[in-house]
Length: 364
Ligand SMILES: NC(=O)c1ccc[n+]([C@@H]2O[C@H](COP(=O)([O-])OP(=O)(O)OC[C@H]3O[C@@H](n4cnc5c(N)ncnc54)[C@H](O)[C@@H]3O)[C@@H](O)[C@H]2O)c1
Ligand SMILES: [Zn+2]
Image (cartoon, rainbow, N blue to C red; front, side, top):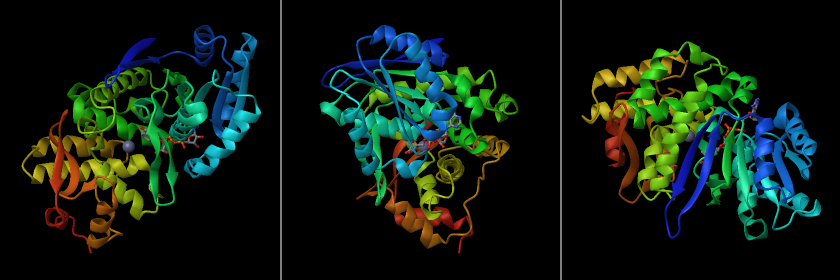
C-alpha cells in the first residue's frame, strides 16, 4: 500500500491522501473507521454497479455502515446538468443531509459528476474518489476538477472541489475493455513525456507486459503518475499556469476528438496529439529528433496512430484547434517538449505558424 499526500496551498491549505494498492474491502473498512457516523451514498454507473458496486455496498453493510447505492447509465452522455438533478433528487429523497458522505465509484464520468454533486449539495458535502478506470486512477480522480458537459462543449460547467481521499484498488482494472485501458495508458505516457524520463524508460522497457491491464508493475506506475499529478496540482490547483503542463498532446488531441465527433476516444486522440506536438517541438528547434522517435515508437508499440487523420483538411484542423478553450487573444496555447521529461508551457502559436507546421502533414 502506498500513500501520497496532496497539499494544496491557496488562501488556506487543504490536503488529502491518495492511497494505492488497497482492496475494495479494505476501502470500506477505512471509510467506516474514518466516517462512522455518516450516512454513505455510493454513486456509480450501471456497468460498475454490476461488476463491483453491489459487492462494495455489501462490505459496508457487513460492518454495520448505513449505505445506499445509486447508479446511472454508463457513458459520457450521462455527464449532464440533467443527470446531476436526477441524482440530487434521489439523494435528497433517500435522506441525504449535510453530514452525508458521497463515494464516487467508477471512471472519470462518475468521479466528475459525483464530485460536482458533492460540491453543491447542501453547499458542499465531503466525497471520496474510488476510481476504477486507468484514466481515472492516474488522472481525473486527482486534482479536484469536477463538473458536467454542456451541448456547447465538454466540462463547461463545474468547480474545483477536492475530495477527502482518493482510494485506489488497481485489481479492478482487470475487467477494463482494451479501449478503456489504452485510454488511460496514453495519459501515463504523457506523464513520462512531460515530467519523468525514468517513467518513460520504464514504459519502454516493459511495453510487452503493459499490453494487459493486469500487469504487476501497473501499481507502481499508477503510483508514480499520482505522485506527478499531485505535485502539479499542489503547485497550481486552478490551472493559472503550471498545471497547463498536463495539456501536452491535448491541443491537437482535442481537435481530433472534435473533428471525429468524439468517435475517436480521448486517449487515442491525445496519443496522436502527443506525436504531432512532439513533432512541432522538433520543427521549432526545441526537441531533438531522436527523442521524438522514442515517443513515436512507444506510442506505436501500443497501437496508437502517430499521424494526423487525413480525412480532415487543413482548414478543418485550423478551425478545430481554435475552438479549443486553450486559445487566447495572442494565439493558441501549446505545451511543447524540450526533452523527454521536460516540457515547456505557454507556447503561443498563431494561425500562420500552425499552418506552416501542418503543411508537413500533406493535408487537403
Ligand atoms: N476531472 C478531471 O481532472 C478529468 C481529467 C481527465 C478526464 N476527465 C473526464 O473523465 C471522463 C472519462 O473517464 P473514463 O475514461 O474513466 O470514462 P468512464 O467513466 O465513462 O469509464 C469508461 C467505461 O468503463 C467502464 N468501467 C469503469 N470501471 C470499470 C472496470 N473496472 N471494469 C470494467 N469497466 C469499467 C464504465 O462503466 C464506462 O463504460 C471524461 O468525462 C473526462 O472529461 C476528467
Ligand atoms: Zn486527457
